[in-house]
Length: 510
Image (cartoon, rainbow, N blue to C red; front, side, top):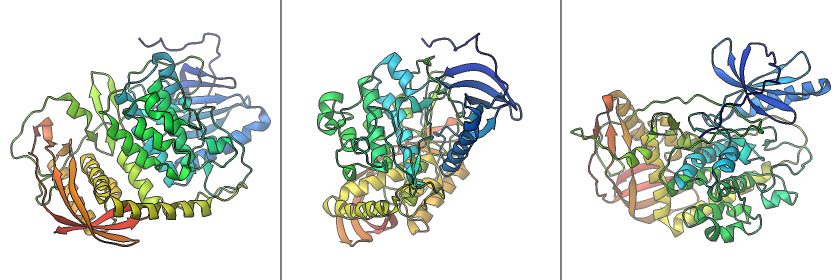
């Protein structure tokens, strides 16, 4: 049972221009967080009032402006956004943010203990994807902690607190920051935060959720994973917690790996810890759309000829909503979303060439390190394809299934080269689906075999057989049909290396 809303009769109601404060929802040593209604729009927001000394107010406002600049580069519904910073008459600063009033991961784990695997998938798939979008924009979060993963009242996870975010190319002295137990070992020893150190911290958060409150040991987490957290999450977290930063997956790859561990389940919120001043939020936008008829190789998904109802709730748990959100509704009040594919597509399409934000503050440049890392990752992608072509094709097949289920053309950038024949064919499919008011659910492709016909450092030809499992087509009014499974036949898949990842350019008869 959730605790009642926090109230504090002794707390004077602050006056914040343009906002009506309604409830105190958090308190820290130097700040209060209030739920509030914006007078101009009626939208519910969070107002964090920092009791800053007068001489510090301008610095807080400058930091807020920097945070807004950072987040303008990231398109995600799982980011707690800063709307504005207002200096109050008493010298305090009011930060107006998205309202995430469902508590934090720290609240959830401290009250409930270990979370179910499906809940962990629901939380960490979109959080990892959001982190990937930050990385694609040249941003290192550098302070991932249980208090910085927040939830809306509907259970949607949100990544917050960008005060300590670092920008690739910034130049100012490095000091170790972050939350004890969630700082990558190389950063704790004095190294600069990187995308890889963020991935380590993300894995530490998942470890914390799976174990019920224990962060991993910084030096041997990878080797002790299965004994501590069991076989489901061990392979995913062990790679993310590798002692070698270069051996860790990207945040985008981690998002896909999390998604595959278990069927997503709604997060059973437990309320807020009244001692924490960290609540913010977005409203959950719901909607669905799906695809149309097209024939061809099994990567095609054809609409049904006759509607059939499906009652299996487990199937609903696998359904991705329009605008790239992974959705599930169980009961009358619990809704969660995950912006996986759009974020992943942005990360992969921008990873090789995203310019750093123009914020000069004096740090040692990381641009050359980032370039070297990207080149090394590209070499690993070529080596991976040579050694295990079915695995590379399966990654693309999974990404394409997710993109078609989402109904969002932007997600195709995760699988298709922009402007390619493959992308144009997929765009036709999505246009047809939209026109017919249909959407897919439970779409799965399985690579039965794959062999390389030719490969170099930038392109490849792969002969593969890919089967398609039964899936669901949802039409107007909720009508459902389930086309049968389709066995694949041999097709030639043309690939191009984009940054550090393979993308599809064309599919032709083998």
